[in-house]
Image (cartoon, rainbow, N blue to C red; front, top):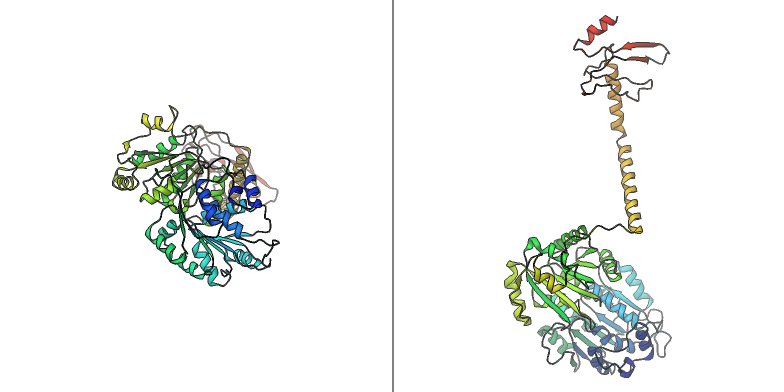
Length: 526
C-alpha cells in the first residue's frame, strides 16, 4: 500500500467522494488507484493493468463519478429522462453488481446521482422504466446493453466516460464483437478507460483502434513477474478422484478458514459436491450457469452475508466475485488453462489480505497441470501424491489432528427448526390430502367388506374362512378374534345382529373352527 499520509484528497478527489469513502472505511488508495487517479482525473485515456483483487474498480470509478454531473448540481441536465453520462461494460452479471455497489458506495454523499445495472436474466421492463426515468451511470453486460440500444431505449450519445473492465475475460467469453459495436455507438469525444489483468493481442488491438493516445499503467512490482498475488499461498496435490470430497471436507476444517470458494469444472459436479458437503454438515451452496438469475443472486447474497461459508462454483458463474474476506480457494478439479487458474485463485488474497489456494490434480490431469505450471512459472509441476489421511496435508494447511470429513450434528437454530416444522406441516397436510383423495378407494374397500359380510354363512364364517361382522350402518367392520398363532381359530362367541333396521334381532353362534364344514355346523345349530 502507498504512504499512509497519502489520502484520496491528496489526488484531487472531490470532497463528497472522499467523505463517502471515509464513511465506508476507505481512506488510502491502493497502488493501481494511486497511479491511475492523477492521469484519469485529467480526462486522459488509460489502459490499466493490475492483478485481480488490487482495487481496479475505484481506480476508474472515482474519475468516472467525478466527471458525472448529478441533478441539482451546476450545469446539470434535466432530471427527467436524462441520458447516461458514464458507461461501464463488464463480462458477467456478478461483476456488474459488484462494480455498481462500489460506485454507489463512493457516491452516497451525492443523493441525486442515479446508478443502475443492466444485464440478462431479468425482465426488460424494469430496466426500460429506469432508463426512461433518467440515469447518470449505467453498468452492464454487452448482450443486454446492445439489446436495449437496438430498441432505442438506451441512449449512448451523452456518454462522457466509457470503461471496459476485465477486457481479457470479455475476449475469452466471445464478447469482443459486441464490445466493438458498443464502442462504435459512443461519441467520438469521450474518455475511455480499459482495465484488464492480462493484455492479450486482441485487447491491445482494440485499445489502439478506439483510444486516443492512451497511457498504459501497470501496477506491478518490477521484481514480481508473476500474474498472481504474492500474498496468496499456493498448494498443489495429486489426489485420487474417489478421495477428493473427503479431502475437501477436511480442508474446510483448517484453522483460520473463513469464506471459501470451491471451483468445479462442470455444473453437475458443482451440484453434486455442494449436496455432499451439506450432507457432511457444511453450509454450502452451488453457483453455476444453469441457475436462474434470482437463484444466483440469492446464493451470492447468502455467501456475502456469511450465512453460507462455502460456495461451490463453476468458472463462468464465479467470474467477477469480489469479496475481500475469502480466505481459501480450492480447485476441486484442475483448471483448463493458466488464465482460468489466475482468475480462480484471484478470488482470495484481495485488497492486501492473505489467502490460500489449493489445487487437487487427478492423475489424468497431470499433463494439463504441467502446462499451467510452465506458463506461470510456479515451479509446482510435480504435485505430491496426497490422500485425506496424509500427514503433510494436515501440516501444510493447519488441519487439527484427528479431523474427519464430517461435522458433528448440531441442534438447528430457532429459525431452522421453524422451517422444518413448516415442512412437516406441509407433509402432514399432503398426507391428509392423499388420504382424502383416496376416498373412492376406501369406499370400494368398505363396499367389499359389506359384500363379504352378506356372503357369510349362517354360522358367521365367511367363504374365505375369516370371521367378521358389520354394524347396523354397514360402515365399520369388527375385528376378527384370532388365537395367538394367528390361525383364525378361537372360542365361539355370540353376536346380535339387526337386519333391515326392523328392530328384530337374530342370534348367531359361530361354530368353532374344528375343521368341520360350515354347513354341518349350521345344521347342528338348527
